[in-house]
Image 1 (cartoon, rainbow, N blue to C red):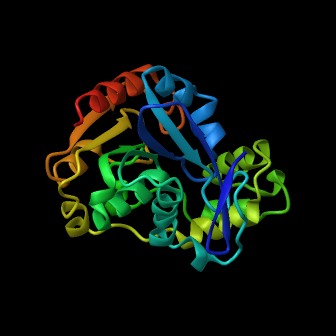
Image 2 (cartoon, rainbow, N blue to C red; image 1 turned 90 degrees about the vertical axis):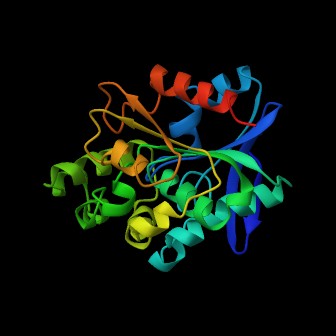
Amino acid sequence: MPSFDHGAVEIAYLDEGEGDPIVLVHGFASSKNVNWVYPTWVSDLKKSGRRVIAFDNRGHGESSKLYDSADYEISIMASDIAALMDHLELDRADVMGYSLGARMTAKLARTEPRRFRSAILGGIGMGLIEGGGPGENVAAALEAPSLEDVTDPVGRTFRAFADQTRSDRRALAACLRGSRRLMTREEAAGITGVPVLIAVGTADEIAGSAHALGGIIPGSQVLDIPNRDHMRAVGDKVYKSGVTDFLSRRE
């Protein structure tokens, strides 16, 4: 698996296919494989004629594990996207993030819109501004001696997932604490000059309202993923077809 160094942080990535590039940014406690390879996003996008690039966020997958929460400030995490594009000599690309990855994508779209052909924000609605995702209860669950020591139901879900994926739980806890900064309404309204698609499951209780966020980001489009919650929306066929259609209409 190829990798590159962004400062002191080694970032593992994949780069497959040919055509217009799309960069995929996974969610918290996930990885490029869990979020994008296993649900066949990578293979499906390649079949549609795309060059597909996906990476493991710092603290996740095969990338460097860091234990200082300051290393996971959302603007720093977003800068990893730009650093990967620089490493691959990509001036501009479509970028799709999911959940935490969507927050990273939105941050970069706000500060460096020239890098974007389009931005796809999956698994995030008004949570981008109002929060509502995993909090200190999840960080504590990740740091608990064992799953049996966790009583909080949301914490148990994330702890079980982290155990299943053999993640570095201490790095994930640091990431969770460091990446909490939300966008203000004014910052979200400042995402201009970038075509934006917001895609959220209609049963997603974590993301917040996609349509409310769509009313704030100028010119954005909203894709409802019917009857899918935060976890099950990722590989949904409506999500995939909606993204394919959206990408086909970009210049």
